Length: 268
Ligand SMILES: NC(=O)c1ccc[n+]([C@@H]2O[C@H](COP(=O)([O-])OP(=O)(O)OC[C@H]3O[C@@H](n4cnc5c(N)ncnc54)[C@H](OP(=O)(O)O)[C@@H]3O)[C@@H](O)[C@H]2O)c1
Image 1 (cartoon, helix red, strand yellow):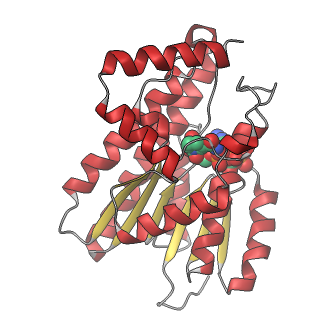
Image 2 (cartoon, rainbow, N blue to C red; image 1 turned 180 degrees about the vertical axis):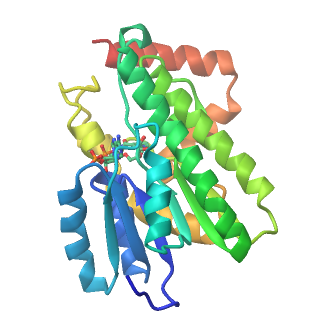
């Protein structure tokens, strides 16, 4: 695709639904062209048609990021199309609720691969060009669960701790380079991840709507934080209070209370 130089190009993983699709809308509205990545190509293509109203040029790439060679293939495809990424948004992620011992080996491997390995590999692939241009933005979608252990979602929360630590370390390393790294830490948000889970595959209980953040406001905060180069952004006042509480309360108390609540809500 031939693009006017003035429009920055953002790559979003997990753009076929939820927070990723909403981030695509916000970035398109704000003058970005897009590379949208996920497994469900038909959804990405439908989103590309929708985003044409913002004059956004959109490339859609079907990619299962749990495959070991997925990121290498994705990087090759970007290179063969001469697409240089200005904004990298590592959003794709999966969750699981229930006892860690009950997860299948495949579920464990997929979660580690998607939530952590693919995110790191894609960042590692795209960062050198950003450094060469002395400009770039990286937005990694972590979670409020990065602030505390979440028994019954133990592995998921641990992957998000990883994402947050990786992002914070990177942000410091990149100081003065013109590149920023931001961790977006949403609380429960009204997406398929929560909605499909009601009695479904991830084992999350039904969550009353009042406790769910609106996906558009989460994406909007993500966009603002990313463009401002904030290192950590927790969307929503209640979530910010929860993060503050977790960060300032003794660890033993945080994990005990978290265990108590999780056992009540998440036991299968
Ligand atoms: N919803 C919440 O309450 C919440 C809270 C905190 C953090 N988060 C985080 O926000 C991010 C987005 O979650 P969401 O709530 O928007 O979930 P979602 O609606 O389920 O969307 C997940 C996205 O990830 C993509 N994806 C899943 N498996 C993939 C794979 N193997 N390869 C490539 N893409 C894959 C999905 O696309 P395909 O299925 O088409 O591949 C979809 O676009 C995740 O990192 C999640 O951990 C969510």
